[in-house]
Amino acid sequence: MRKQYKRNKKVKHAAAFQVTAVSLAFVFLFFLCSKRINASSFFSSENLPGVSNLLQDNTAMYKFADGAQDTQPANKNNEDSSLIYVSDLVGVDDVDLQPETESKTVPSVKQEPISYGDISKLRDLSYLSTHFYTVDSRTAFTAGDFNVDTMLNTDLKLDMSPPGPKVLIFHTHSQEMFADSDPNNLMDGVVGVGEKLAEILSNDYGIETLHDTGTYDVVDGQHEIIGAYERMEPVIEQILQDNPSIQVAIDIHRDGVPDNVKLETNINGVPTAQVMFFDGLCLQNESGKLVQYDQQNPYLETNLAFSFNAELIANSLYPDFARRIYLNAYRYSLNMLPKSMLIEVGAQTNTKEEAQNAMGPLAAVLAQVLK
Image 1 (tube, rainbow, N blue to C red):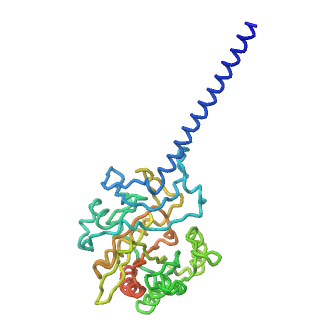
Image 2: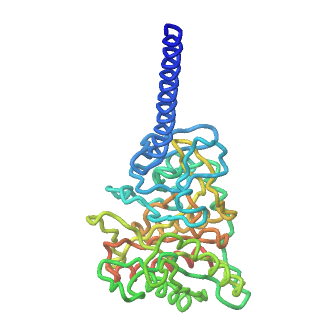
Image 3: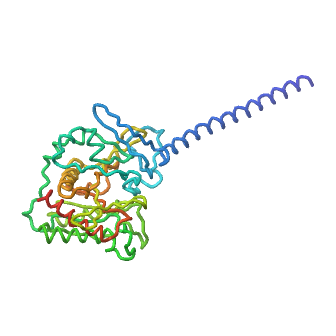
């Protein structure tokens, strides 16, 4: 009986040890899972870093804006298995890139417009990044991409010799409307603005312009922003293939700002929506470290030169018409041609008339850059 008791005691001890070991294993696994969950929440919009100071080294300068509003896919070329990629949730090629801008970055104090007379100031990269550009928190200002003299000397003139249209205007987000737009009338929103710009470029400046009114943010009759850039691309590529004379692609949007903000100026006594030129750098800020976006843009250098020169001309012709150029992380529609541009015309707080009024000055700016 005593020996049997000892054996039973050993069995009980072994069982207790097994239960303890299993419990510890569960605790350890729970710890690992909680770390992974914390990593995921770190990449949420609430926890993206808002770094107000300017960090500088020999290769890059960083100026992060506060208030990121949504999370974008990380770079899957990074082999660090500890990173959690938001793109896993929506697919590599079906990405929500809206909003393009962060409403909290709208300047509360207007700055003096910078034109050609200020080039020496713009060679100071710190000044350039804080007075000429607005940098989204999802990306960073990289010194290597912003050589002022290179951008100034880039040849942006159109070759007018081949017959056919030279400029293509389209709208990845065709459903963007203004304060008094009829949402059931496509021409009351950005599509109508694009039509106006096409008419002025063609009739007043002799720059034949083709306007695509495709609706890439509508699926089965329903408004669907996710995937709009992917749906747009093959159609625009086909238009460009069918019209080899086209040398400029312009994607027209309108911005989204707080309801108390009005992006309006006055040009020759006419109330006019302000415009903003927009660039995608294909570089993402991941916890203060820059990584390349999956989809790169071979035309980035010319894109940057195009918006840079357009901003300088706009500031010379119509001070206070153009907001600072906006830099964000992704490619958007800017890989269609070397001379590609995304332009935000006003915001949801502007009237459709103010947006339409902006097309005359905008056409004059574009014509001076391109002719």
